[in-house]
Length: 95
Length: 477
Image 1 (cartoon, each protein chain N blue to C red):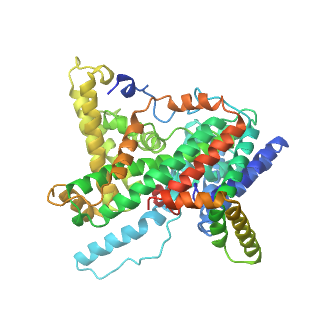
Image 2: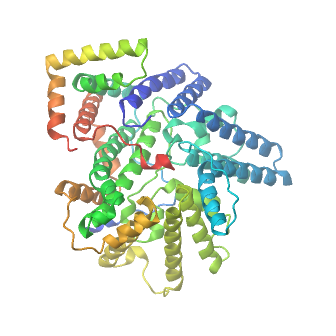
C-alpha cells in the first residue's frame, strides 16, 4: 500500500472546513449550470419527465402538465434523443 | 422529497433563484423567509401535520434561548437549560421510544404474571426528529456555555433548525458554527460552486448506483433470510452493507453540504474516509463526525469524559456509545451495536494507557502494522454492522452463524457487485486532497462545459441507476 495513501492529516473532531483550498465562484454560475443540465435532462429523459408528471396528485393543473409532458416526450421520441436515451437505459440497466 | 429526484431538482430550481434574488435585492430577512418557507414545504412533503412538531421544537428552543439570555449569570440559567434539554429529550423519547418501551414493559409485566398493560399508540416517527432535536439542544447548550454570543431571533432559530439541506438526515449542524453565518447575507460573489457541484454529483453516484445496487441485489436479500446463504454470500453481504451504508449516508451528507454551499452556507464535513481508520477512536473521528462530535461535546465531556480517570472513563465511553446506539433507534440490536463500540473503545483506551512509553506513535509505526490495524478495525466495524443492519438480534445471530457455513455455493455475489464493494473500499484510500484537485480542474472548464458535463453525468446515472430512489438509510433515525 503506497505510503501517501495511508498518511492522512489528523484533524480535530468536527472542525473540518471542506472549503479549505477550494476556489469560490459566482452564484450566477450555478444558475447557468443548472439550466444547461436541466435542458439536457428534459431533452434526453423526456420519458422520465412524462412518468413523473403522471404520478403527480390528480387535478386540472397537473392533468394539463402531464399532457404537455406527454406531448413533449412524443416530440423528443420522434426527433430521436429521447428514443436513444430510452434505448440506452434499457440496454444498460442492471436491475 | 428525496434529494436525487426530479421533484427535488424542480424544488431547488425554484428555491435557488428566489433565495439569491432576495439577497441581490438587499432583503436579508426576505431571503431567510424564502429558505424557511422552502424548508417547511420540503418537510411537509412527507407529512404536513408533522411540520407543526418541527415548529414546536423551534418555539421551545427559541423561547428557552430568550429565557437564558434574560437570566444569564443567575442560578435560574442552569435550571432553564436543564428543563429545555429535558423537554427536547421527552419529545424525542415519546415519538421514538414510547412504543418500544411499552412493548418491553408489557412483556416484562406478563412475565411477572401481572395483567396490567401499557397502552400502545400508533405513533408516527417524524422524519429527522433525532437530527432537529439534537440541533435544538446544541442551540440551548452553546448559548448556555457562551459558545454562542447571544440568543437569536425566531427567524434565525427557525432557519437554523429547519434549513432543508440538513433537516431530515443531517449533518448535525452546531448552533455556534452555523448561526453566525446568518448575521450577514451570503455573498453571491463568493460561492463554492465547484465544491457544491462535485459533492452533489459524487453523492448522487454513491447513492443511485453503489448503494442502490448493493442494497437491492445483495444486502437486502442476504439479510432477509440469512439461512438461505452460505459463507461467501453472507461475507459479501456484510462487506456490501459496510459499503452501502457508507455510500448511502455519506451521499446524503455530501449532497446536503453541496446544496447548502450553492445557497452560500457552510456545513462541517461529516465523513472522512472512515474505513481507513487505524483505531476505533480514529474511526469515530471519521464516521458521522457531526454525531460523534456532538456526543463527545454534549454527553461524554459533561459526564466527566476522561478527566476523572480510571473506571469512570470506561463508564463514560460505554454510556456515550450505548446512548449513541439507542439514538439510532429503539431496538436491542442498536443497544448491542453501541455496547460493542463502547466496549472496544474502552479496550483501546486501556491498551493505550498501559502501553510502554517507548512504543511508537501510530504515525511512526511500520507500514505493515498500520495496514493490519486498518484491516482489524474495518472487520470489527463490519461485525458490528451485522447487528445494525439485521432486522433484529436473532436475525443478526443467523448471519453470524451462516458465515461459518462453507457448504453452500454462492448465488448472490457477481463480479459487478464485488467490483462495487472494491470501489467502495478503494475510495477510502484516495488522496486526502482529491476534492481540491478536482476543484482545480473545474476552474479550467467554462461554465457551459460544467453545465453540459453535469447534464451528461446525471443522464448516465439515470441510465445505470435503479428505477426510483429508495429512501436514505438515515431517514429512519
